[in-house]
Length: 176
Image (cartoon, rainbow, N blue to C red; front, side, top):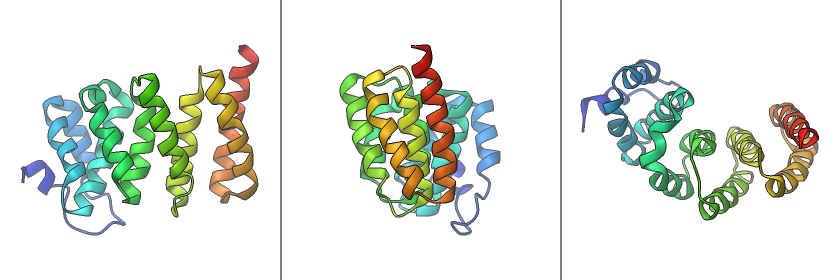
């Protein structure tokens, strides 16, 4: 195992460990990105969780780092049952340049995430669906009613996030 992944190990799932330090190191030395990406398929769930956290943090400012990993990220996101990997993957997916078929598959996966037992996964999926719907009237028409429904049945955090997402979608619709 590469030392950078060992630095993500240890402790428990309630801690991000050294994820912030590793994210800063990857931003300073982008060649390390692939090493952290390998952590998404590590046998250790703590390494997978922290690798996903690092990748999400890094790609927030450098989404282009995901370009060579698009298919692999989509595959991992659709196959994993690990809550922490799911929520970070949901946040990264809208950062990808997706083909129509990939976008459709991502939307289906995110719709499935809305059924996850974790409210964090569901909230991140809501966010991702709203981001994917920007600039896509057909998808916006599909996502908007879902967000309205989640305003009624979701957790308080989901309702608060849903209100903000709907405001953004409605602003975009009024500009169109």
